[in-house]
Image 1 (cartoon, rainbow, N blue to C red):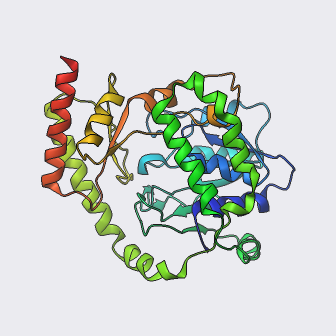
Image 2: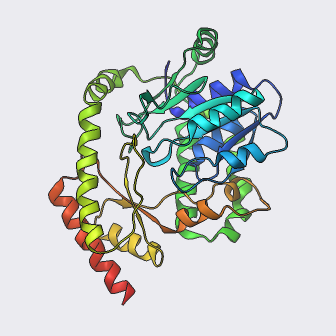
Length: 341
């Protein structure tokens, strides 16, 4: 089912599956704000869980330990790395929990012989800027459940253009805040995020833009070629950073390379801003999202917090080639060494 965005798809899915008013949805805490926005816009409540180190996905033990199990789980495959989806699915099956997969940055990833996006009752894809299949917008939902597919078709039939102003406002505010504030100050602005998310649910309900359909078809045809190219760029980064004893995230088998993930234990933000000023294709990764939407969270998320503070993402898409990767990697090493000294 093609829709205007992954966010719109999630809202529709949650409205269909979770009938209980203010029903609960468990998510990994290191997600983008759109996942939380979808939960609020659908009239549900998020439960935040920490991630585990190997896959950077939801920690299954945290889900298992919940005394009050959620109505649904959104399992996110972060960085193109499959989360421990088989274990999460087993827990969901045992407790009657709806499992929704978020493969927005993991299209083409595999768990053994099975593709991500085929485990839960339904999965969500995104084709927005920066995704593995990127056409500047739109998204999709995938399901084997014919009844659910029919309900989804009915739900999204009247979706329009949404309200780009509200969508952009929340995105820009989030980016500004996580680049500018420490955690203790972010909670003071949490009411703004929750208010924007709940203000007008229709703001996020945009329909598929048919003008982008041909571009999507073309990108899907070359998906394997795209993934292989990203892998080659990642290998160039790996070789250079290995020689300089810099730590990076080593993807598990079956992962696809959405970005190359480098760990910078100290001065990450300074290096990030310096690289950006010099035109480097880099970004950070989301810190725990809970403080942005809740005034008091009452807990810490050790692994998610560390990644939010230390990860530096480097581009591997068609914006770079091997020559650019080498230049940017060596530039980063130069900045890193000068900073350390």
